[in-house]
Length: 80
Image (cartoon, rainbow, N blue to C red; front, top):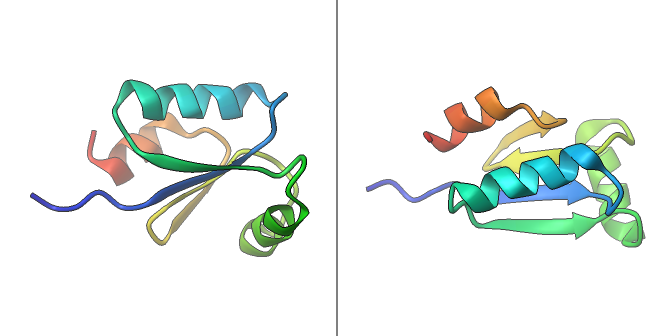
């Protein structure tokens, strides 16, 4: 069985789509690393460098980058 790609989400506590994405990962048993870019300035800078913008969530699945909560794309990348 192939190993699952590493999933990272850059989020803020007040972002509805961030919560939806994290709930989606949890419901589908997808392990993820969550960075609160509201308080973590280093990770905020990293997110902006990766995505070119300030909007959250920014989600990385392996080498793929998704801006926003795109459930069909996440299902495709995670094969779920």
